[in-house]
Image (cartoon, rainbow, N blue to C red):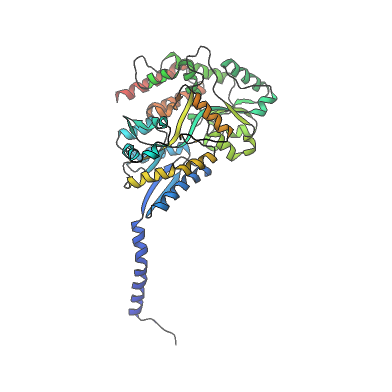
Length: 430
């Protein structure tokens, strides 16, 4: 005889099932979600970031971190749209400088100074200068999470050895290297300048070598005598176009995409001998092509005749990818705990294994490349933050646009300088 449940039994069974599910539903309702965005789209670094989040979740029951990772240019756009709509993530990465200050000035970023005062031991692990790009009016708005980076010229040591070349120390030396490489049908520089910021590095370093860091600081901050039409910026444009006319770059450079490896592929194929890029590039090369990485070294940008800038100066950051908390975040205290987990000692060890050096006091490494980077930073007269990150966003965009046009020989150095000064003046009036 088959048992057939009655309507009453069915209702009781349904009630029992619902009752059993109630604790799970309550648990789901109690879960607090912290969103986190960054531009660590490469698998290795994204995994390091996620591991820090997992440590946070393990010590903060009821909290879940939802992380999203983006490519560089896509991230900039998405973050700008999110802040414009007042829907930013709780935790977000930035480069500090002008773009972050714009969000700070509009009251959209949490002042981390009180948190850092309450966690003095955590803060004191960092090199003091690493907070410079995220400090405004003596208040700190970000934690230096990722790396100590400089712009360096990576080069294929085998090609240099085969052609009897040595790393150039002066402008004339560089032009000689360019000539010899072209004579041997090897492009001197690989450049993927569709993204605009890779080409900016050349202009930043040229302006620094020619005029010193003070020229930029005066122009950027409207100090007396400061102007983007200063002769140093015009000469920087002239020197850049001298490189273009000397066929210093592999063809199609203004259309190649850095985010998909447009410049590195030229290096791997021995079609180009050098690349000016942030020192993070070595970690990328080692992950992508470990055999090729064995024949890569770097040198710093050469001096320029009559230049006032110290040749030891570098462009870069002492701790890039700063982590901040948006004012819209409903769990600010927990979000700061998350920031600490993402930049704790284990995170530093993991990043070091991935050839990235967090700006911590007393950090040591057995990696010759990283030691060389740290030596260069230690000896640098100054560390110039990338122009497009230190300048207000609108002015930074004009900078990138005009530099790309300089590379394309579609604008003169004087015209580029005038456009920059006009943009700076317009920004100052706002």
